[in-house]
Image (cartoon, rainbow, N blue to C red; front, side, top):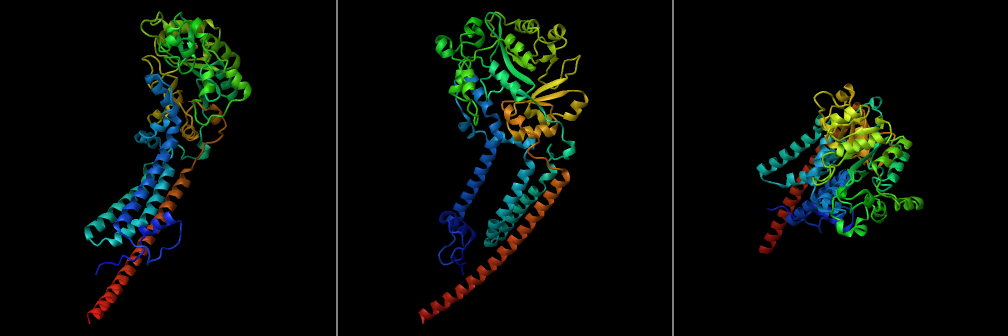
Length: 486
């Protein structure tokens, strides 16, 4: 006799509770299980897991969304917040978070909880399958995945699993183009905000005007951070270095910041700050250096080579170096990042600190300061670099979880857009001693294993009750049929 469909299954119970909000045991005479309900519940469960996955991806990638918008602007020429569309197509990029292992201990606990919850429908399905092959294939697959999840911590070596006494000093902060969440980037206002924030270095970008004046600008076109569209409407697509300094002085470099805040969650400016922002202009490198010396800030800059038809295309390094030397500021306050003509720069300004954007230095000198993207952290042996007196700065770091990971790893400094947030951190978000994590791992796995065994034993009992009920129903139907036939 076929099994009775009057028994309330886990699938029907879950659907009943989700859609009716009646969180009680389903009446056996009203809810029946069929393949449609099983499939629909499976789709709901997968959708729930997918939603959790996208939530995690979104939290991880918020650190880099502004950089992504800038990348598209440089290649397309139109500024727009592409992050919503971006989140729909970058699921594979979340793998870098797994490489960093910043959240691996917590993901392991979540995975154990998930596999434990999944045991109930798996056990229910196991005892409903009558074919021996599929039945034990399901069991083998489930317990194989469970075992792999239980043993994942053997592969985890997160930097923040350490004794509190071994925690390195807090990394110093470098303002990425200043404090671009509080002031227009690459302006003197942003420089002053950097000093107020407690950062030690102002990181910026330098270009050469058509008449040889080094000035601060990141983009190859002026449309994003100036009002060039209204001042020079016929030259909006010209390279930033194609403008003379007299023309650059006419541009407003702050009003755009008030019209479209480039960062999510940035606090609105006060009245005085708004007035100061809307009056910002494009500063020269000389102005920046002199103001930074007053504020006791060091300067690090990327130097952009002008286009081929530019007057200073071949001598842009000398032009910039001459500006630095003529400014009268101490050479030690300048962190020289450009690789072009580095030997000549070292000869002319021996006290200037040389910063390298790669692991290897030149053939005669080992680099003393590295400036690398934070994604390179797994490739770095921070302790070995420190033993060789090499300092490490990583960029661009905006989120507390990432800053905490780099702090635990022993990084010397980070470049950030959110100086005001990271400056307030006095301790990593999480720091777990190895023995504590080992205890959490063992206890979590033991509790999960006990719950798995309890679930399968309970479902076995339910299966026997279903079988007994089915036999009683079959006998009753047989008697009724015989009675009718008589």
